Image (cartoon, rainbow, N blue to C red; front, side):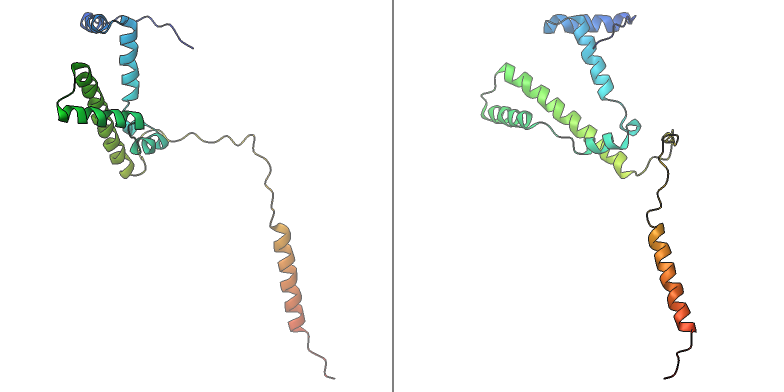
Length: 161
């Protein structure tokens, strides 16, 4: 599902998007969408919910990306890396570094403990709650009766034979 949004962009931003679109043989809209996706992905970690912060602490490249990076680094070391390979290596290294920075920021936030600033979690509505069931009430009554019976026996004098 998509929504149509009309934006007025500063001239410099629109020009940058057009230039990149031309160089990469893409539509300007696709370049701008990519930029927006990146901006959303780069939300400050301190604003994320705890489960998202913890997920970022475990962030790592996919196995395929790690294997490709390792292969490209090996080819670079051997001097057999062509220009397309170099471009891909630069892209993967950038992805790797960005991921490591993001992971480090997440660890810093996670180690910082529970957030005490900002909005609190909303209250849970109790309008649909079910009535309380006192499942132990019968057991408590039974034990109290046993205690009273034991105390009553202890107070009665034992008849001599």
